Length: 456
Image (cartoon, rainbow, N blue to C red):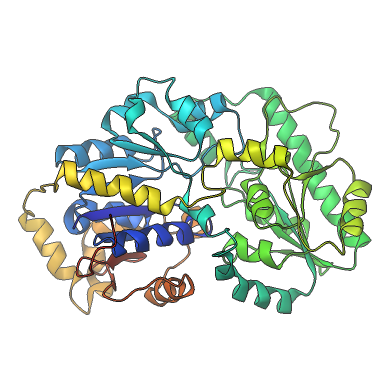
């Protein structure tokens, strides 16, 4: 049995896939701490004490390097499943945006989404034998045998909104939560966003705002605008603040909304890939803005391309009676190079790699708690903890990201939600114990250490 830490940065994007992975690991006899990244990190070395940590990135910023260094100091294995994956960018751009080469010295294994990302990593100094092409577990749930997981909530959305078209936006560069935030992110990674890209995305953004209003007037369907988690949602709420049949929504997992939609519209958004894999009619809106994108866009490639409102309407009307969207052989072949779990599952592959790491790496050894840490632990276990936690510095570390954008990214997570989602996944949860990591918000144990292992 090993203790495994899995942080979640954006609940709507990562929760279900990482819960699916955690359940597979628990079924193999491991004990998994799953939850909000900031809360998990705040208790990582005092409560969780992982033998293996599955980071969501391998780039500088947000204390990642310090976390990696401490984990290695205590003998833990560091692995990475990049939360972004690179489906919306070129190989070189993904390397620039998502990989800081000097951090790779701390990493024991990387779970690459596909062969393209693996080949990019092989251009660095990182050992190819530690690169495992697995895909991402969140795409496992889109497979025909598992997608029923999203059906119940999709039906409720359909009942609430009727027939609707889903518009997924992806304009974090031009519609960031704050200018200070985006500058900080790119400064930390020493990345320069070209003026061409900024201008191009700004023009596409303006066209999206325009076509959304025009589309609402042209169809007898509701329009759901779902902003990217990294965007300023208030921009859309202000733009569409009247009861015009346009709703700005961010609740729940985007796949519920995709499943319930009559069609999905996007531009260079991973949800385009997800929609195609769910066989949902998906449109990449690519208007003529007087300049061209310089990079290949996989989400656009696997979607139907429309340049004008009329082309959008023609496709929606022409495909009104079609049961489902189907990838062409060319689209599927390209997609499989970027995403390894189109035809097979990622979670079992990852579980096997982690199992091998537990065999070769052994258990991490953390130093005994200091008197101060012991006192904090005692305080956290008392019923009056919520009233007195403010006397320690722990709550400041845990809660500094729980307002504003942090709250937007990881809304509250409950133990009931964890259990109900496991039930919907048809996981045999016998002997798996679900509990909260001691008085910590949004972090839970998925404990299969007493279960009989199903790991080969």
